[in-house]
Amino acid sequence: MINYASREINCKIVYYGPGLGGKTTNLEHVYGKVKPETRGKLISLATETERTLFFDFLPVDLGTIRGFKTRFHLYTVPGQVYYNASRKLILKNVDGIVFVGDSQAERMEANLESMQNLYDNMAEYGYDLTQMPFVIQYNKRDLPNAAPIEDLQASLNPGWEVEDAAKQRVQPDPYHAGQNLVEQLSGGEWIERAPYFEAIAVQGDGVFDTLKAVSKLVLKALA
Amino acid sequence: MTAGTATWSFTQDDFTAITESLRRFLGETKSLCALLVDRSGQLVTTVGDAPGLDATAFATLTAADYSANDQLAKLVGETDFSSLFHQGEKSIYVADIARRLLLVTIFDSRTTVGLVRLRMKDEVEELTQLIDRVFSRGRHDGAPEKLLKGADDEIDKLFNW
Image 1 (cartoon, rainbow over the protein chains, first blue to last red):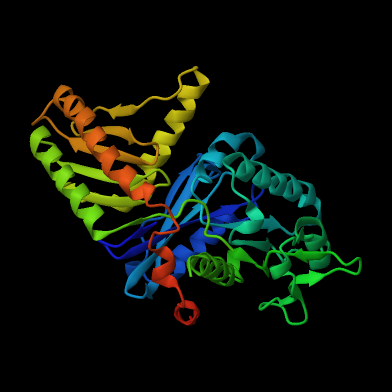
Image 2: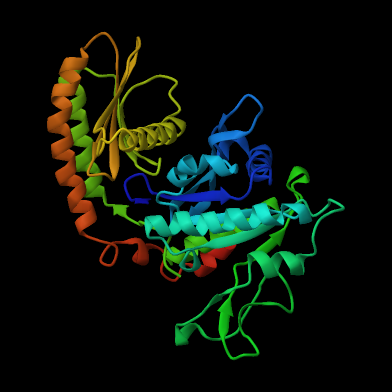
């Protein structure tokens, strides 16, 4: 939403992913690191055991562009499967999505289920995830049982087909040398993958890289 | 890549018209404060005075509150509850505008819920007309493209931190 009167660009970013994957931790780290004058309160609608019940919310100002203050509203959704009704509500009018995956090998099924749920919920609103600012974060990279990135990519970010001929050209991944976001497979088919980031959110590693990437995509979508 | 979901923009004229309408409403109902909130939780504008109110957080929670109620309505077989009322020393009345925005009024004992409710109906109609004008302009002849067109370098610079 662009407000010419208050000279603000407001964007909504939602952190999605399985329960206990680190979505709230991402927001807590951002809250702790940005200057107090550039952020609002961190609001958590959580249970007594600190599991997200409805959402967490953090507004952050990322700077000024063409004289407009860019204000990003960061939301998390509750990860647990049975909270789907509230999860879907948070996706309304979303501008960008971060999928926070749990790298632990035994959480692969939960990751896949959550990713499928994200596609389904977006589709119910008529939004096409493949046409939106969307990045994936593989969290908990420091754990001994973390699956290799290649496995996570193959399962959660295998790529979607690029049908538009104008977009069928190699697009290097700016975040990983030697890899591509858009490329042609050996079978001739063109695919595009979402940018991905490795993270250890409890230590803050990868948190801002992820946020920067998705915010940039959101603003570029307006350019 | 297209912009997220529902990009829309307010011009200065829209904003002035909306603010004037809200001020009139505030005066007639003797409410403390009125806020216009996007259904996604973003604050559009606020008039009046509610000391110490964190308007950004308030807007987000109002939108969530209203959305949850919307779903509750569906569960009991209502198409929607068009308004929401929380009573206390300070009370809150929330009404839907064109399923895009919410009008939120905060008031105290200097007025009555009856008066607020009565005037709210007219105000919702008036704002609906103003808002329809904003949305009927649509995205393609709207301003977002013009505003950030060619701003790629500036966007890149914004993230050099």
